[in-house]
Length: 310
Image (tube, rainbow, N blue to C red; front, side):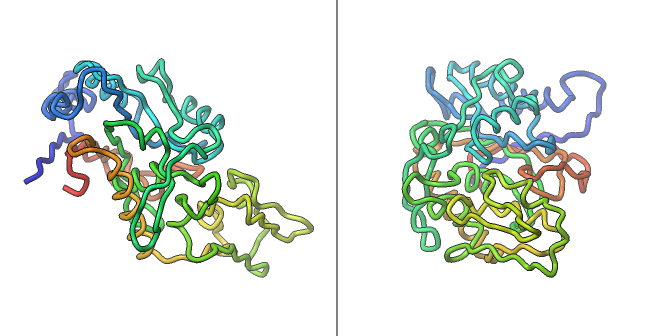
């Protein structure tokens, strides 16, 4: 029977040990990280760096506690995520959100390189077939998955599975493009973007949010560059007028995420991945959006396990 460790967010006493960082220290001690990772072993701390405008992520103080716990057993941790916008820009976003070597105590590394094409093809399931796993994730032997729990427009809920499925699969492959990347989870078939001119209110949010400049407007008409597009779906999600559609369905999306997560975890040995979910600042949407909305419920606490679904 898998064990799940939980510390509540509520403070009962006015002392550090009852703060959430203090409780996280005790939780990490209770987990006994030395039973999962070896001395001198490189261990990835997988988290989401957030977005410009989206600050409700796993806070740097919590990441630092994980770093210190891993260093305490002699491991060599680093903090990582895959490219969601171009790599140099994403590192700037991470730094602006407080995630850097100085604040967290460990190097910040892009898992699939600055261009997001440094990856390895890994066999997946019947929906995806194969996925492009960042080479750093593929090669590293141990990982602590630090996930910010929040809502999601397609999945309803995002935690450890989504953090791995989306964050440990690249946006594109050097030769296969988006079809081996996370875009294959977002859409069906060729992923042809549909634009309804009558519904469009010319707010240009879709153009602004595209990380690749794949959407432009000319004389009020949307121009979509299919070759450049990652099929990340951000344009569809910010279009409040409902003028943009990326064909897909929620059940397929959730099933394909499970396939992707399983494919990523197949590159690790048994008991080499630990999951820490932060049930704090639980907002209604994903951390890759350009805003951080008001939390829908109060902070609950932190849970940890070596079982992703326990």
